[in-house]
Length: 378
Image (cartoon, rainbow, N blue to C red; front, side, top):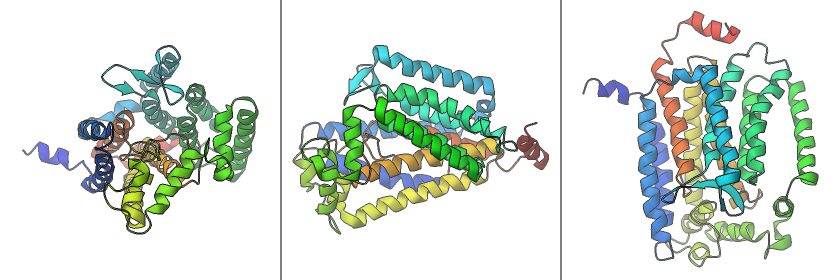
């Protein structure tokens, strides 16, 4: 018992306390679909994935992940994941128009979820060794190359939403690494040029339609704007206190697409109203706060940047998903952390937090001279 107690102290139980209600909200919402086709199946499977996710979270928190600071290890993991993304073009399973899943029969796996976590790790490593010389703009483009490889492979599936998450992870970590205002302007101009190139030469018509609906969602409510239109109806019809558990007509009558996954926030808001939605948002804010709190106590630059990268990872998912549920952003098929149905995204969300917890063991035991050497790249 004496050996177990110190290990359990590495867990941030306050973070767990914030996560559990969000998971419960997702499960309760899915349970409301039980009378419908596959409703009970979503609920039962999600319980299994949740248990697996928590197991990974606790196991990872006990592992010393300092081996991930080795460049050869991270590059190997990165290339391995890039290879899996390439493999999707041959063996990938098509779902919702994107060839982004590996189907093993009894379960499906979306490799991009793993690549998002790997990208956070490799960018944290890259910027941690170049803190002093970060004002050299070449490091922005070199780091951009690491993100460009998975970005293109995912975009070609095509999975526009996950590609955007990869871009925001890179952009966010560039910003927190200490970029100057001049470099920020260069990045912004580069982003505009890249977007213009994709708009005219790469985006499919349905992807352009989704972006056009961002400016005017009501232009085609029976076509490309249908999902966003039905989602905003679900959220608005919940009003202040909601219609009550199991009484969400938009989801139960199948007007709302994917109510267990992409649009679970809208399904939840319809049943729990404005008050329930605010409660969920406050829980997400609390989770981001705890992640950033532990990031600031990182032993070295690597741990600090990794924690910030995980915060950016979660914030990107939360803002994009809720934004599209409210009709403020294009529909991109991004899951809401801990709440949307699915196993692969849930596992790697817990994996990222588990790695963060494992870093607590040596966060306060580092000598000041070692920290100085890390900043200097010695």
